Length: 94
Image (cartoon, rainbow, N blue to C red; front, side, top):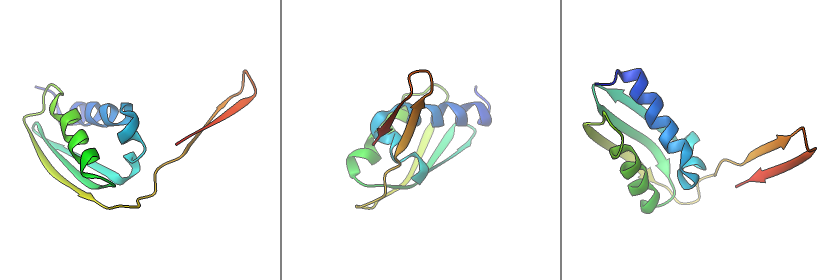
């Protein structure tokens, strides 16, 4: 079985890798204890709440999910700025 820290990193990475969930990653808190993953915080739709749970449930080592995510419409999405210094261009992702 994974240790808590390893599983936490896997969960965070899996959520970050999903393009829809990644926009809300700053609003999601993850806790892991012996394979039990707790998701807390907020997303702006029930579809995103369900999506986050499905992503986490597919990971090896997850034995149970405690789903405490709240749906709050109008949440501020994270906007990222990526600069490619080799090309001299900038892209804004939403």
